[in-house]
Image (cartoon, rainbow, N blue to C red; front, side, top):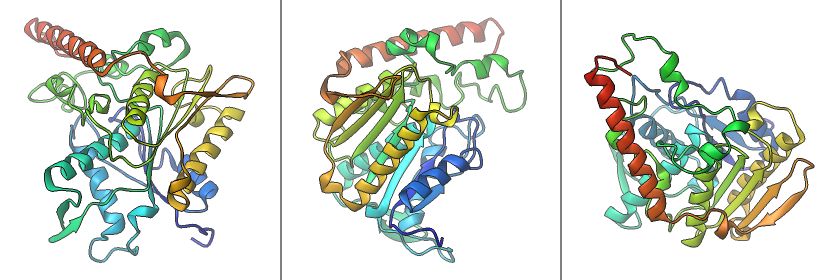
Length: 330
């Protein structure tokens, strides 16, 4: 803690497809963010699927956030102001970050601008954090958008391979069976499972998105574009020829640039939020950055995305039922 010289506190939510990963896996990345921001980085050890399906992980992230500014009895830390907290995550962890925004927004819609929550026997408020920073966010559980197939030859992301390789055991398939690791197939299009289908981002804190030229890039493009059109501050950085979560895999100039941009956003969200303005960048292989318009990154409407996802969901349900009726469990 002697190295901490700023008020920035990052709550980091790791990726791993909701069924693998741990704060120890991302210790180096979390430490790098802490060093660059000269602040603190707290990693969440949320419960994993398939033993703990939706909404367990989301609730764990919510509790971790509440614990920062409403410490439970006998905590080792003092309360941290919500205005000093940035929620950050990659892939599945980024999904949970964006789902947390939607959860708080929905609570506010129901209870008014100041929503209250019973926490360790006390009624506590749930203010918004200073910002959200996501990398390679996985926000469409049906994998229906164009980039999922268009960028397949450049990426290694494969969300179905885990199911195909795992032999039957006490953990999987589940009892009763549900068809997907994280949730029942009927819930794939729920906005807290697939935040890309959230109706409104109005009222969200500033958002930072970064992606490679990956299969999931449209997942972030659509949310970033929609959120900016609804009045949110959105910062975007896209890297040509880079795969899913590349900063955690490769030691390249793009990696250093990403972490610097990431840390810069975290610091600005805490120290100078009024100075944040929507901005889009595309970085080529020569590390030359070009400005892009965040409001026109993907030519899909909300209705088109919803149609694509619900069509794919029905296909998945039919396929699963056929396998079940044939005596084969996924």
